[in-house]
Amino acid sequence: GENVEQHPSTLSVQEGDSAVIKCTYSDSASNYFPWYKQELGKRPQLIIDIRSNVGEKKDQRIAVTLNKTAKHFSLHITETQPEDSAVYFCAAKASDTNAGKSTFGDGTTLTVKP
Amino acid sequence: DTGVSQDPRHKITKRGQNVTFRCDPISEHNRLYWYRQTLGQGPEFLTYFQNEAQLEKSRLLSDRFSAERPKGSFSTLEIQRTEQGDSAMYLCASTLDRFGPQHFGDGTRLSIL
Image (tube, rainbow over all chains, first blue to last red; front, side, top):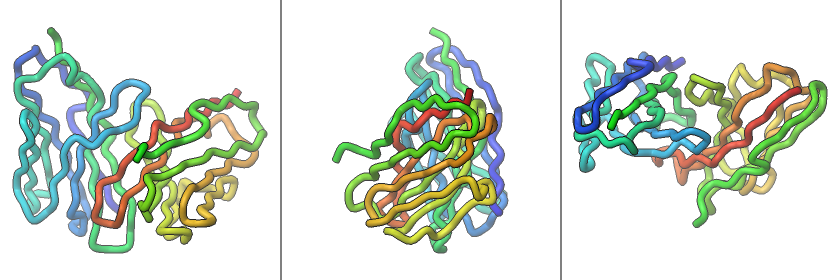
């Protein structure tokens, strides 16, 4: 089955700096890679996703890059703000099969210091 | 569209009791997923439904766990003879189809005394 590893487990940055979170996956059939933000006591919320037919996607201060050959993908947050502080999860899913599940990383706790 | 809703938000019960959780997906979403999340971990897949058919179950889902989606709309997850290790957040998610992103509910936090 799929295995997703996420690093680092904790990340502390100064407000305005950039943050990068990296994930690797094992199953070459995975072709959909979402990123979720989860604030304490709240639901995971999708912030950005990428499919395997593109290498990079950007949405304002958030970008995701994908290297299919190396089986890794990364989340980049620029100009971080205190409200970016949360736990971020990456996930991998094979959409082309009837297997429906996403496999999640263990999360990165991001702290943005004012 | 009010999003995925789960009930109850919190459940405290004694070991050995049975509990049942409910999930109402986004209307017209035909796929519904159950995950379990413990502190410091990502969500772990338990099972999923396409309409009323349960298509996949994780090995994490022991025979004490059962899930249903009888009419292809809401789903229930029952845990029988609860154990301390069942304490976790149980998350439900839904998607329109196999290509769409998963939308999560707020979860049901289960605490076993």
